[in-house]
Picture 1 (cartoon, helix red, strand yellow):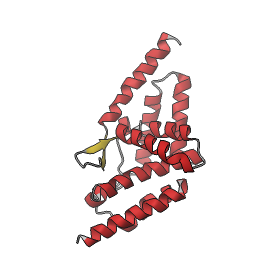
Picture 2: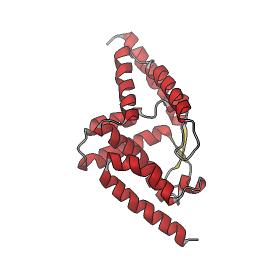
Picture 3: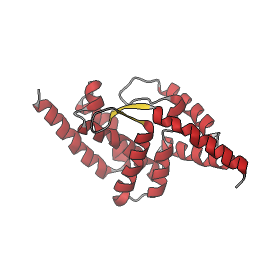
Length: 195
C-alpha cells in the first residue's frame, strides 16, 4: 500500500466526519434531539444485521449500501421525506456530491463506493430494495416511538404514511411492511383516542 493511497483514503475518512453534522428531522427515541445522518446510517446498518435473517439477501452487501447511501448529504443536505423538494434539483446536488466525495478516494475505491451508492439509488437489486425498505422503516419506527415525531410536526395523515412508506418497504420486504402497518395503525389509533 503506497503512502499516496493512504493519504487519499485518510482525506476521504476525515471528510466524511462531516456527516455527523447533517441533522435530520427524526428525533431519537428519548426525544431529546434530532438524529444526525451518521447515526441514521449506523442505525440502518444495525437494522440490516438484525432484520436480514429472514431475507434472501447478502447482509454484508446491504450493510455496505446503507453505510454509503447518505454520504452525499455532506454536500447535498438531507431532503426530508415530508418536505417539498424539486426531485431533479436534489438528484443533481446528490450526483455532484457523490462525484466530489467519492473522488477523494483512490480511483479503484472511488469506483466501488460510487457503484454502491448508485446501486442503492437505483433500487434494482434485492439488496438495494431491502436497504431502501430499511431506510423507510427506521424513521417510521422512530415516529411511532416519539408520539408521531415528524408526522405530527408535518401534519402527516395515516394514509400519507401508507403512501410514502408503504411501496418502498413492501417492495423490499413484505413481512416488514406487514409489521410496519401494525405499528402505524396502533400509532394513529392511539393518537385519535387522545383527541
